[in-house]
Image (cartoon, rainbow over all chains, first blue to last red; front, side, top):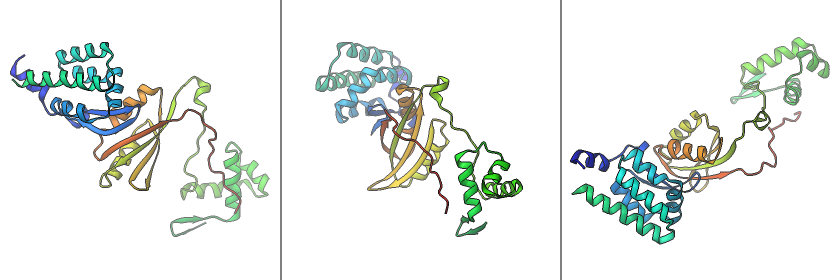
Length: 107
Length: 160
């Protein structure tokens, strides 16, 4: 991973590319993440229903792949989805994956 | 027909004509005239004036989309906004082809209520996530998908 590709993944995104947290179809919580770092923080704040909604729709993977362009993170989130975690286990495991990746990219 | 406090004042014949064409807009001027006991040219003149004054906004048809194989879902979307941005949010929503109606309401908070049409839940969610949530001033959104329509009519005017 080159410094420039790390910087690209860590960049602050435009409003259009931010991740918007919903709890179900069309129900936006008002929480959004405009960078990977902000995304990690929001994982601890948003309702678990929102994390479950997005993980099983594949929204996190899609955002990591298409917006952040981080194939490693995409793969790890995909692996997590296959484990079918729920409730607080989902929140904890997702947070670990994203915060670890954040650390890797920052160093 | 006179303008009074921006409202257009109609006489009883105008009201009768409106009622007749609202019930069946395919009627000819002659048919309406016959019903009301006036010449077709009178009906024509009155309708022209009401079009010019904006009383008659448009002539349209009501298509049953399901009958022609277009399946869709309707949703009522309530958008909670920052009051400073609400006009702009309402304007942007009005420009979207997926949005059929936009209205504003001030209860405890300023709300924008919109009727949204989409082919399925994925399309509905995608529209709201990509086009509505990112708008400046949107605080949160609540959406209800219509599962059963009990009644849907336009307001029918009564003779004054």
